[in-house]
Image (cartoon, rainbow, N blue to C red):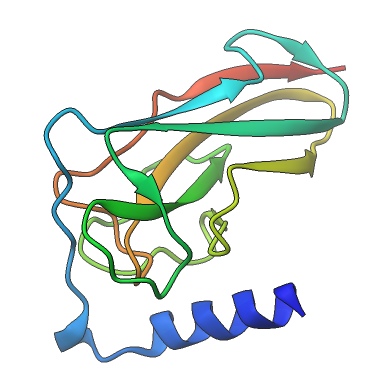
Length: 138
């Protein structure tokens, strides 16, 4: 059921007319970060990524509440998503308001980075983006 609600919310957000898609303001000093794994850490193929957020709150996609958003994870992202439209398949969406996720990665080096999205999956203005970390999967 949660998967259905998440998919429905994401679909509605992505299908909204462009005219109604707006970045939400982020408060000064807001930050998002990866709690674990640590930058440079060697991990197994199945890991739990824990998300941190300061200066804002977490709310599910579709919840239009000031100073809130939900997490999006870039795995091996070459560039950040556009700041003026809903994030798409280039990121893993956590529209249910999740603050961690178990993921499986292939062996080798990978990068992880978080982007906070508003109720419509659009990055805030200014964007709330974590540092990119590098992990090694054995």
